[in-house]
Image 1 (cartoon, helix red, strand yellow):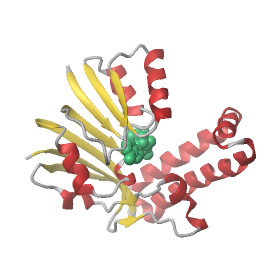
Image 2 (image 1 turned 120 degrees about the horizontal axis):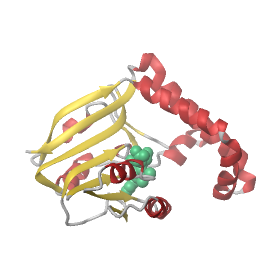
Image 3 (image 1 turned 60 degrees about the vertical axis):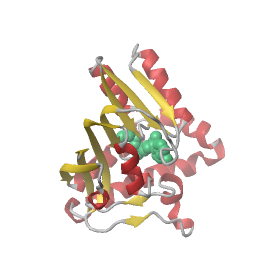
Image 4 (image 1 turned 90 degrees about the vertical axis):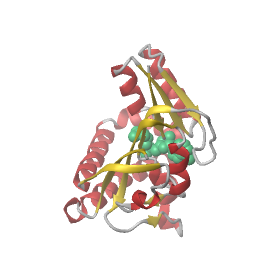
Length: 227
Ligand SMILES: C[S@@+](CC[C@H](N)C(=O)[O-])C[C@H]1O[C@@H](n2cnc3c(N)ncnc32)[C@H](O)[C@@H]1O
């Protein structure tokens, strides 16, 4: 049975997709939220999936002895620092013929910290606390004795801009369903504020990644293997 690790699995979209499509794979997801774990486990029960295991841990401090055939990380590296340590840690979970696929958004040239300096920086505060905007080639600087990238791609930012616009449209179309979720998550008195925050977030992402015809901020994808 092939073993897969989904690092930063979030609400499990990739883990669940693979689990449903490839019943001969065993998938382990790592997330830092018990709510995400509970949601994924509920989905597994609903779809009778027995090949998913979710670990709740902070990846920066997690130590585990394990190895996987394929490792994925989709949009988690933006929440991280210390890429050398992170890649080294993940590489220890790879066998000699394992592959690591990393997807992160990026700026074409500059890496910068998401900094929370004042009230205006609420997107950093609420969505990317302690995170980083990587540069397109940032991870290549942290290749080391253990692993190297043998393929990498850049996807034009307009794709991500369209995704964010689709999220916004979906939110607006489903407001009646979303309102009680927002109220129970943030409190009734904060519901309007948070509805506006989420809408503004989607609009800001669409504008950022659509800027300069999608050639400024974009998505970087890497396939690493062991040296
Ligand atoms: C932008 S979401 C991406 C989720 C998923 N990979 C996807 O594509 O839908 C980032 C996820 O990374 C995970 N994450 C963020 N910081 C983490 C940390 N320090 N340790 C473990 N997981 C973390 C959380 O599960 C969070 O939902």
